[in-house]
Amino acid sequence: MRVWSAEAGDDSHPLIVLIHGAMDRSASMLMLSRRLDARCRVLRYDRRGYGRSADDAGPFDMTGQVADLVELLAGRRAVLFGHSYGGNVAMAAAAQHGDLVRGVAIYESPMPWEPFWPRHTGGTPANQTPADAAEAFMRRLIGDERWLALPDRTRFSRRSEGLALAGELADLRAHRPWEAADVKVPLIVGVGSLARERYQDGMAIIAGEVPGAQLVRLEGCGHNAPATDPDQVFRELLEPLLVQLDIA
Image (tube, rainbow, N blue to C red; front, side):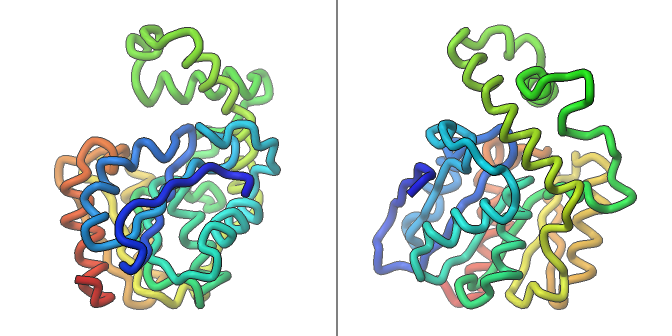
């Protein structure tokens, strides 16, 4: 297995997989995992190029992301929850391997292949190294003060993840990762009330294109809600999906 993973909860319970976004790692899903492991077997993993899978040299494209997930499933059917880029991994897996996916919930997944999506978001500008792009991403995410307060080792580690960031976002721009018509499982699409306009528009498009999908607006939540508001994400996104799938 090329990526690090961990599982919690009774292995006789239904499986749910939590998939993190760009410049993140599975640790951000830990509090959400703890709200699920009484009723589910919960699998978290560090996607290739991040955290404890940082030594993975790629490629950082959707083909590899889906392959990693399918390998982790090992033939088991699962509910998938994806945050940001992780939502596209979940959607692509559902489109390509519907036999392995019971249902999907996503939260604020980027759609840079669409014409309305701003071309300047994420990725690596021509005059910027992947490491500098990673640092810029982190500064936008947590602010300059928190970034500068991080230990040197942590900042070095996060900068080294720029290769994964640049690769996966360039691939998203160049290749549509999934088609709505191919997603034939129950789907709940989440967006925070504090989301940027592109996420508001994008999540509405996804919910409108996938038959039977439900759009849920999380009041008071921003882009990092799975880490900052795990109770609300569980209550308003994941619990309704589990109920719909008869997972009590």
